[in-house]
Amino acid sequence: MKEKIHPKYEDAEIRCACGNVIKTRSTKPRIIVGICNVCHPFYTGQQKFVDTAGRVDKFQQRMVKTQAAQALAATRKKKKH
Ligand SMILES: [Zn+2]
Image (cartoon, rainbow, N blue to C red):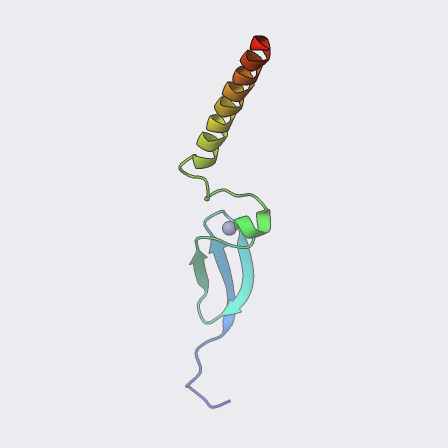
């Protein structure tokens, strides 16, 4: 290794916003990240950020109403015959 041209490579820790700390080695002693393998939805299997507007909930509520209306219409038709 050539002298005085390499940055200091030392023990470092990566701190995530969720509180997880990963020990590693880097030229920087501390790295702050917003998301890591512990809290990322891909690894947790939980979808946290996708349905922020509650669109899935609204769709399901609408579907329940539609099914109820269809069931009501079906019973009315049966009564006529
Ligand atoms: Zn995290």
